[in-house]
Image (cartoon, rainbow, N blue to C red; front, side, top):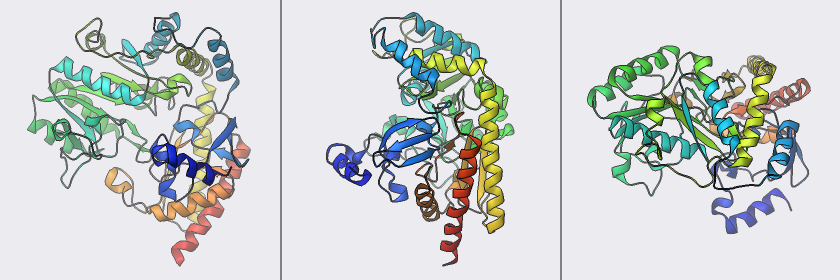
Length: 431
């Protein structure tokens, strides 16, 4: 069956034909690529088309698809059993590894997704501070729990504006949305509610409105405000954790949060999440404390063994980070050269092994800048890349991910495709 035929059939049984919206390829006006298999830097679809893949399961495949370390860990883990509903030694080893890797974190609780991690971390922060309101930032995505699906309005900050039906107004009324990389908007929110804010949650490197790194002054200012007003600072590292550095954003950016949320990368691509924090905060979590959170499959032995194998490999092979970062830099510089040759005013952001090409002449610093991107031109670009065997994010507002399996030849082939695709974009702009 073709991808289109599979998608048409899927739409009869699955809402929108997919189990997560970004897979629908709606924003690029295409049928989804249905993957049959993958190895290294490449995926093979049901039509037997092969693509160099820069989605990499949205981040966790830092070693590439079906890497021998991951493959062996899955095989070995499956021989012991898939789920017990009881504690296992590997959970302890995994928790110890995560805690030792992340500055300022004393304890960690395993969950099953990034959404569950952020939802749980906020509950714990509220229980710890005995306050109700939280601050998030427009353009940052923290999963689909009710209180986090909120957007900003016309002012510098606002609340009570859900981005989805089915969310009660009384739930989102506790969420204040501020402007990313704008400390003044945060100060105004705190001044308005000095005794009511439990937590500030953010992506220290935003990856869900394209790649935008938080300014050093902004992050340090948040840390200072949280200390002054006894607010819990939460880093959402579902995308960046163990990807930008083995020690994640505290090492990479130099600011230490009170709590952190992890996602799929700590499971090597298997479904997993985790949240951690200082001991005085985490000891309030049930069963040692009064803040309830539970999950039958939390700490699932398959995910724990595979995650432990990947994290241990990354710890023992720091050259992985050197390779993926230098590869991303090579791509970014190559794209910038092509943009200059074609006199296209677009922006390239690269942080570690993460990259975004923004189709705008506007310097991209926050969400309003991202909104100036020409998504029609990105659609032309995406389709041309796909024709040439390059699979990138099917949305202007998502990151490209570089893995350790991407070779110099992959990167050079990608740059050739980018040049040809941007020529098509240039022609479209001239029409």
